Length: 262
Image 1 (cartoon, rainbow, N blue to C red):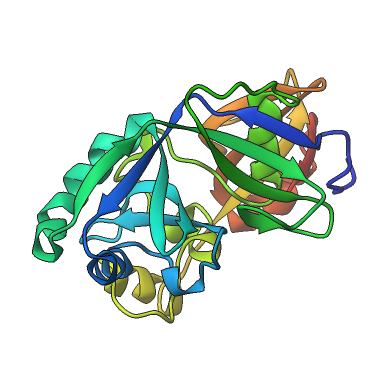
Image 2: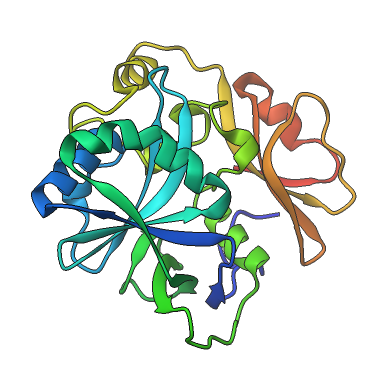
């Protein structure tokens, strides 16, 4: 299969993401900013008004403990996060939040994921073909889905983005899941685990590769393909992320049943 964002896997539209929730850090605005900037892996200075940003938090060993999307609106920040990761997120950050007099409040909002041609609204990732973004609506608002959750997740995978599941907590460092390219700022200064994450980037030798596989529905992955996250079956294909050895990439690309590895 030719690598092409229009290879029948992309569909424009929006979908309600029931598995996500919204948390708001509450306190003095400057204290909230300082707290978040010192904990999350991304640089929140780079979030424009009304926009969003992929981010995460690590433990002191540089292992990812939670991933999420930060939305900025009127100098307030909201955290969009998987419900399964919410308590871990709060548990990891509460010991530090108290030094800034910051508390976390759960908001009664729903999250909409959007795949669009335009680069407006809460966009957090895009290429020349499509953009990915999120919007928040009141709990009593009605939305008619125009894409399903699998189409939303595939669009994210095509742009190199993966969302963690509960079983992934504490298992991976940013470089292993492409987070170093999409969710980590190496210029903003310290965050928890930053020293190890930076050392791996600049000094470490990475012999493994985080990939996107597109394969036949009947394809069965061998032991050398470590699947990360869910396998999505769509349009007579299966789409999944995996970690492989770099020196095996070309050999695996020639495996029957695999359309592409990127």
